[in-house]
Image 1 (cartoon, helix red, strand yellow):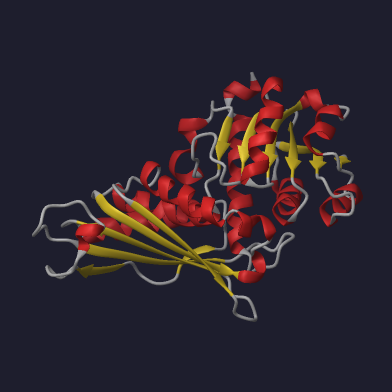
Image 2: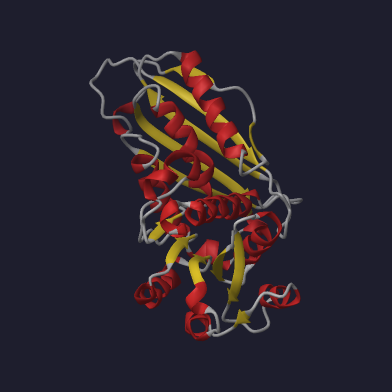
Length: 312
């Protein structure tokens, strides 16, 4: 069976790591083009050495490349603002877009939670690194009991946050918050990102806090552990840092600003601690925040490529 041809837009760290993952790991995809705007970028140079066709003329250059008609899937690893323009430029050509920026033009997709529901979408959004790491946990808790409030804190090495990540901080928090609600199932969500300046750099750490009512704690913990294993299937460095924590919320704690529940409703705080170590295909192991994004995008591209709609 022939491989599905993909193009990668963005020759920075994320795009380059994604290219290497496709080349090394994917039995279904073939990188037909690496697209950048800086002719001197390491990503374009590395792609050239690996035999991948390149252009430094952005999306316009991609459209003009020989073999563009054969490209079925385009993975965009640029920025939220750039993706809006890239989507508009590629829309007339009927390509399937996988958006690794917080632009969120298409539906939010977290592979272990809702991928199958959006295989037909022309443009899918990979939320954020924090969303990919934490939304499966919120969804796992919500599968057992209603989540009145879901809060995530993603702590990443400052050194792993490049110009694109820093430029998109505002979009990161808003996109992740909305996905906590729409994909994770929380009635209300909140997202916080911390750029940890520690040296040597620390791997990605994530904390998930859910406010729930009375629930079967064993069922919640089992659901969380199953969610972790589902993510580990495509992100091997993803793991629980310790067992799921359950803490009763004192009646006098001011939770009314967080959870819209009647006064006197018994609440429990479910806390999950995670860490994500990168596979170090191109990026250092501490950059788990970038690795989980490229790994999730690869999983989505492979499912789209092997779906009956694409093969037809």
